[in-house]
Length: 328
Image (cartoon, rainbow, N blue to C red):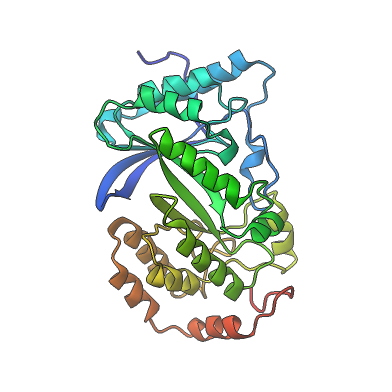
């Protein structure tokens, strides 16, 4: 039964995702929740998105109305995969009441669900309960816990991102998730603040090499400059430049594992960009690659001729740590 009380989530859209070598229809939902309990990451503006309430019942009703809107606007039988995001962690009981999680699992029963959470909220009881409500034996792995690990390097995660957990916390959460019948997806952040272009590339390559034994999916997210963040302050002062799209291509071409990438803001000054001439073709190619896994496409894009490639190569060779970026 569809709730008569409906409210549009923060965002909701249909798209496609690559899963087990195939392209599947996917519905992405970003619920307006009680807000991230950590809310201190240097690059994240989602911490400002929260529903102000003093009652768990009111929060549950607010979330229920958003699910009602989703069910009224989309035919769920058209989707194989559902991606769930909130302002922080879907499995945080203070942000998303457990009763609503049960409602979500029942609504999306039989789908592949990818739900984002910090590692401290991935407990055996929580994941086992959600998988039990979600699973109807259609898929071998009905749930994937998505964790914004960002990097396997603890000092970079602490100093450049201020994530508030360690790599050991992450690996412990992956073990809990797997034991409870779920898979794990890791999000990596390419080029957080304070890293040179070359340092950021080296960090991502190191992270990719170390993650394969812990997760089933990896998504690399080039950092974008979101409003009302600490990162934006540095960017406005000329102390931060988003990654070059050339760098994204070079990482994807040589990645030791399968990696997807959706360069949000690609070609824009706040997102990963080159010179403006080659950006559109490269951004489109990266998104096509994420659906096909065709590394020959990445290689062909990396072989393109554009004057800004010389600039990128110069930056890799000469940009120094703890200095202002050489380009904007």
